[in-house]
Image (cartoon, rainbow, N blue to C red; front, side, top):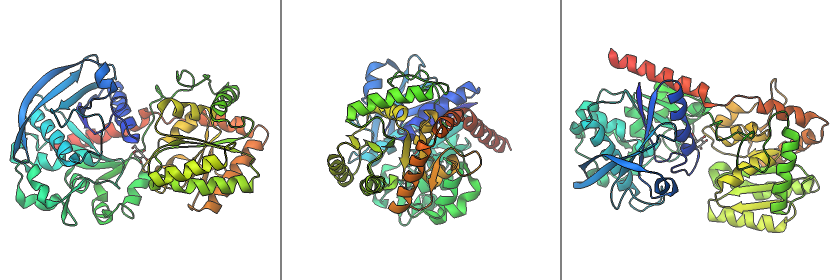
Length: 476
Ligand code: NHF
């Protein structure tokens, strides 16, 4: 079975968040389960692309927005990622450093989608499934069915995975000219609230959509930035599949980025050494329990709640713990956190920015990971945390509800709280401190967490079952 994944991100080529991690890992696991999965990305002028060899497999001209442009398809030479990687190159448009935030982003992603379709349309061997991720690839299912240019693709099953329904790829109807000729009778499929909505079009036109956790599928009908009714109507073709983690990359036993490797057997000594070195770096007291936050400093992740939480915890628990924060995001949140770190120099370490190595070191050295997310479609950080024996303390929402079992429940290994209020979160941290102080408790929870299986094997199987079901439908 040939499956092509389309995405704006794919680790280690281009990653901003969890989308990159998923698209960098899932195809590998599909491959080891016998599926010929590959990834087609826009070309980016970034480290991985500069340092690896690619060769041209196809070039042609396509039209979008009444303009004809030349595009090339490049293939990575060695297959070292564990799957075939293709990049779509367009001079002056798909040859940039950053992934997002260009003023002509609309043109950038439409040209990417159109070039992909143009290439596959002429290719003799068609894929069995086209799997689109998030709104940047959301117009593909519509164009496959409703543009005369791609008639040959109309019967290929499409899957659309929603990693984050808050961002939808809106464009005004004045931008319809950017698209190739489409059947305008079907324009309603592109529309949501009087504008073209790429994510809505994808959900309407794909054969099946998935969300990255079952709870998130439910939540989208209640809170999805205006698409609630659509998700309510289309729920029947949706499935929630929990993400996995790449256990090859995230493995404390041989992770080259951490200070000292460890296994479930040696977790206590390993964590002690990692914490010591991390605390040295940030001027923190290594004898205190260490609570970490890693992630984008934005409202969705509840990052603006951290300054008050840190103040309150240090007050309520007389400075008996330390915090460490890694991330970047909204300027105001960054400034507030900088003030907090300055005010509590001995108790709060802060790194504004994105640093893959430091994130691994924090998972290895911290005792707890706090996730006060407002919205969390799946969440990968809590999964990385348990893999490194770090206890997650999470708001019960989305994928966090599906993956973290509270200590008080059978099989529990984490701490959950229902409301995003400082008081509730302070209590949750209080429970963390009690657990830390309890003799031998922490040691057994760490072992328990490290034995959990959140690898991709299980989730990959669920995707394969879905692909098989769609291919059967195709045959009918
Ligand atoms: O895990 C990958 C990630 C999710 O919750 C995460 C998010 C973005 O917000 O699926 O995508």
